[in-house]
Amino acid sequence: MTRSFYSLLVALLLTAPVVSNAEEVMRYDLNGVSNFAGLFPKTGKGFTNAKMTYPQNKIQVVAGSGKTPTSIALSAIKRPSGSSKVSKSSLVHEGFEARQGDILKISFRIKINSANADGLYFLDLECSTCWPPIAPVSNQSPGIRMYLDAQNGRLAIDRGKIGFRSAPFRSTGPRFPVGEWVDVVYKIGLSEKDDGWVQVKTNKRLLLRARGSTLPNQVTFAKYGILLAARKYDYVEVGATANESKSDQDVRISNLRIQIAKGAF
Image (cartoon, rainbow, N blue to C red):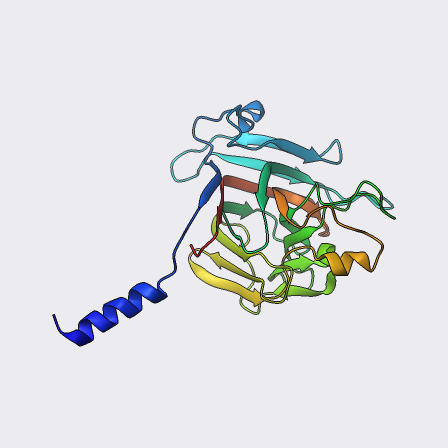
């Protein structure tokens, strides 16, 4: 082999992304699940709890047939007039820890059935244990939330709960596909600083890429008299995590996978 070939090979090895200490947090594809109780296996690798805020909201397992996968139907009514309580019907996996410098990869298959889903939040990444015991306001579970923009139906990442209400990450591409099954791969480079990043692909096509803070920042919260107990994420919530649309919503999920790595995926 020539010297130039060896030089090229060494350069490729030095620049290739390396995955180290990758952790499979959850991988759940509904095989064999036939009822609500089956969503919460004792292994801890399934969902750990559910959230529903109104009696009319529902979660049920729907059997598949042919090309239609077995799925979870999560139905949430629009927020009743005059109510201050958010309408949600969602499932949670919690108990892991993702911190500064980690890369989270969340893969899931979703079908949002309503033709008027603008304003729907359907995946939250938050921290339930970061809030201090004593604070001016109750636990707000800081984090970032995936939603459909109420104005144009495009995908966006709300960063309001980590102090950037006016600076969400927004897709400039087409509207998020509604009324069909969509494979979503969501990667988050976790950082309290501006070198954080997100990348979202739908059906293997890049839909959103942005850079900026993705973790709660101690300095930001201290301005409001809140001294965070930790800066991390410890749960993922999927479904109709907040129905801020103008109509009732039905969200289907057929699988969910959560991974954490120190290097690149």
